[in-house]
Length: 154
Image (cartoon, rainbow, N blue to C red; front, side, top):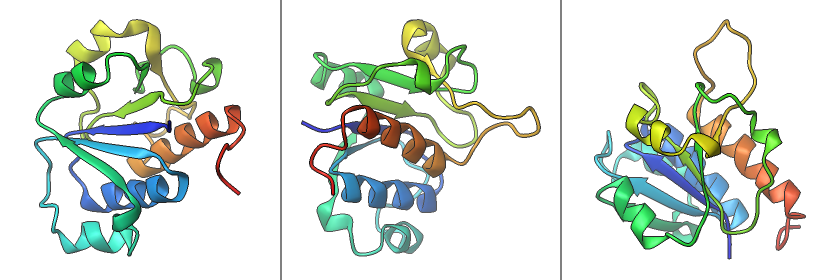
């Protein structure tokens, strides 16, 4: 098994490319939910992922409901600045999904209302609206990896 990162309607190719590189380095599965704000042959996307795309376990989905249906036996955690609990207040396990929304709007309100117990956030000052998507994904993923002993990683 492995962790999973889901990007719901990502807009910035460099963020997705950076996240793909993190996924390649950690054996994490990457799920991209359409519509995407870029073409998958975008040179910025490829440049950010460098030459690691062949190592990314990548799936495309037409909706987030499709992801939920395909992986209904898994646990899903939803990153949002609106969460009450910090990401460090959860215990993660192999196979968990970390779900992130688009850079400009985050996850849809309806999705947040449907999953109130698994909303998590990164602590930060009130001076900014949010952290960069690729940084947020890496921070939460590495907490999950830390909690599971970095199994399979050197």
